[in-house]
Structure formats: structure tokens, C-alpha cells
Amino acid sequence: MSNAGCGPGNGSQSQSGDAGKGDLKWWQLSLMGVGCTIGTGYFLGSSIGIKNTGPSIVFAFILAAVGTYIVFNLLAKMTAEDPQEGSFCYYADKAYGKWAGFSCGWNYWASNILIMGSQLMALSLLSQFWFEKVPLWVFAAGYAILSIFVVLLGTKGFDKVEDILAIIKTAAIVMFIILAAAVYFGMLKGGGNKPEFPSSAGKLFPEGFKGFWSSLIYAFYAYGGIEVIGLMAMQLKKKEDAPKAGKIMLIVLMIIYVLSLALTVLLVSVDKFTPDESPFVTALAGSNLDFFPHVFNGAIIIAGFSAMTAALFGVTNLLVTMAKDENAPKLFSKKIKKFKELPLPSLGLAAAGLLLSVITALIVPGKIYEYITTAAGILILYNWAFIIISAFKILENKITGKLLAVFGMLLILAAVTVL
Image (cartoon, rainbow, N blue to C red; front, side, top):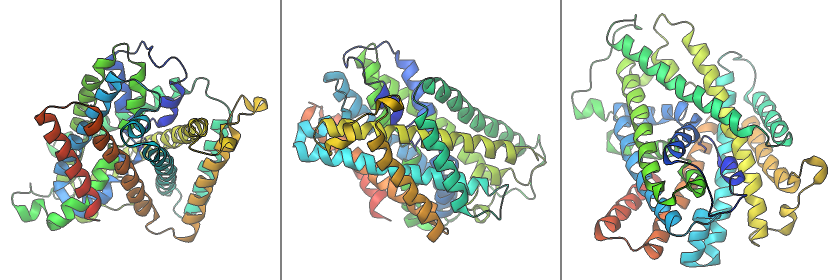
């Protein structure tokens, strides 16, 4: 949100006012989108993609950016025409009936539970950078308890904290790009022999095209969170600016992602990357920048914890809305006055999902991050596919718009069918 980033928490909270009012400018939404989207799915999950496909991971991220833009653009157009708090769930219901809205809502809830689990595993793996002998489940339990505690404190000041953490995330990537470029061009000492630029298809696609397509799911996952921006688009002063905000957001994200990943695969051989370490830390591990791994690792942990806690807010609020719409038991719509009007039943179910992640980490600590990330990515793309097919019924697109929508659907199908 969340990978993704900011998570649906902020989106849900911002929906409490009149759905037709808002004072957000398009560029503010773009900046929010960048901060909300960058998360551990990119900081850590991209290592898995690099292992699968090598230097061609750059093209996977470009294709995923195109697919993401197509989805966001359709969602933004539906929002501009008919602003609704339920966003993509409402449009699915409008296009195909209650079953579609119900399935999108519960699928979104489940995907965010998995995203929280993914973030939890990422935080635990990153913490082992300093404490190698501490089991994953210990870190997972600690971060889960801390996240629940933050939610119990209430939401006052949460948006300001998220803005600060978004700056930290973006600053960490910009710092990497500057340092990596300096190493690549010889201004800073590098680590050993620099791999040659991939000049043939074999070097660009070391695992073949199957490896390339299998990396697409991780590229899409790194862009996860645009549906949250669809919710936040409700707060735009001019709803018709939503497509422009999404376009600028994705251009900025793509430039940041592509530049950083290109430098990463140019500095280090593919066999050096591991899912247990951020590719950016690996890329500069051989340089004389002893401070970088510690500073960058800390920045990723802060970003990941922010994303996980925001996702916890999100699934908690989402379940309340679903209960009010009779898509979930009424129990989950109840709020407890003694706990700052918090929906404790909904929070309890989300906490149970976190607990399940901790137990899973205890039982199968090996490739659990990769498995959870893949599952979360598939569930996210289910909702993205529904956004596309809902737009076919709701919007009156020209032939070029319909062709783009079909292309977006093909990219999504490619990402989930080669697994």
C-alpha cells in the first residue's frame, strides 16, 4: 500500500467527510501517491525479481508502470464521473451486482492482511542484518505488537507522521541513486570488478523470457497502492484532475524505480542478490561506504513499519464500512467509546491476521517472504482486473481507450499466469 506504502488507512480516514467536497490539489495527490506506493515490496521484493530475470528487471518495472497507469486512469475517470466513498468496490457493484462489490471488498481486506504479513516478514529479515541469530518470529511478534499499540493510540497526527516517513523513503532512494552513480562513474570506490553492460539477449535475459515474465508480479507489487490513491482522489478540489495526478505520480515513480534498479544491476552480478537483503544494500556492499548499509537498512525498516501500520488502519476501517454495507457481520461495525471510538472487533480480526503471519514465520521461516509477497500481489491484481472490467461497463471509452484497457488486462494476466 501498501505495498504497499501509505496504506488504505489514510484513504479510509479521509472519506469521513462529504464525498463531493475536497480541497486537495492534483500535485498534492501525486506527491501522496509517490509516498504511499514506495514500500518494502520495492526495497526488498525487487531482489526476488532481479534473481528471476537479471538486468531485464528494468523492463519489467516499465511494463508494470504502464499497466498500473492504465488501471489508475480508468479508476480516476470513474471517480471523476461518479465520486463514491466505496471507490472500486462501489464501481464493481454498480457494474456487475452485489457479489462483485462483496468479493472486491473481502479480496481487498485479504490482500492487505497479506501485505501486512509481507511487511512483517520484510521488517524481520531486515532486522536480522544486525541480529543474525535472533529468529524471525521474535522480530515478527515484536513489530506486530508495536503496530497494534500504535493503532490503539488513535489517528491524531497520523497523517503528519506518514508524510515525514514518506520523505524518509524517497530520500533513501535518491541517496542511493546519487551514491550508486558516483560509484559507477568512478567518483567513489566500487566493490571489485564492475560487470560489463549487458550487450546481448542472453546477458539481458539470463533466465530467458519465462524468468522475465515471472518477475512481472514483483514489479506490479512494487506499484501496489494506486487503488488507495483512487480513494484519496475523492478529496481533490477538481475531480477531473485525478487522471493527471496519477500520470505525474507514475512517471515520477517509474523514473525513481528504473534509475535505481538500472544502477543496481550494473554495479553487481545477478548471483550476488538474495531475497534476505535489499538489492540496494547489496549493490553498494563492496564500496567504501560503511555507513550506507546501516542507514539504508534503518530507512527501509521505518518505511516498512509505516506501511504495515497504515495497512492495519486500513483493513480495520474497511471492515467497518463493509459491515455497514451488509457485506460483513454487523459486529465489525461496532466502536468502543472507552478506546477513542476504535472499532475493536474489526481491529481484533486484523490482529489475528498478523498473528497468523507470526506463526507462519515460526513454522516455515525459509521462503515465507517470497510466498506471502506473491500471494498478496495476485490478490491486488484481482482488484485491478475488476477495475478494468468495471470501466468497460461504466465508461464510454473511445476505441483507443478500450485497446489500452485490453492491453492492461493482458499485462495483469501475464503477471499471474507464468507463476
